[in-house]
Length: 152
Image (cartoon, rainbow, N blue to C red):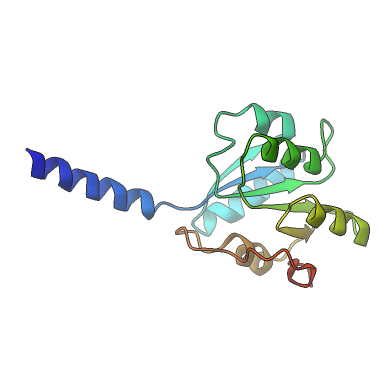
């Protein structure tokens, strides 16, 4: 019976290690949430959308994601405020700020606030996936170097 337990534990551990990366899409635009979630799911990621920062922060799943895509300008709170609240809870999940606003000041604010990347809308698929990394749990591009911001 002991050997059977060990066998099951190994199988369960392997399944967990090979699970798809979980990505949270936090955006008050339903169209953006839906399109990003469909795109991510089609590429093998597990995606979950949240209608804003308050909804995400109220979720018991908020610390279980592998990567966060957070819109900058939302009605209830900004993406910077969302990330600040998470970091205050000790959640260190990598996050990219996503915005349709095109100012160098916003990009600088994102990087200084702890975001690992700044992605302009509309975004290019290859930029998004290079940041998140492969869906099987491999590493993405963790750079905080503005030259590697993902929007060339």
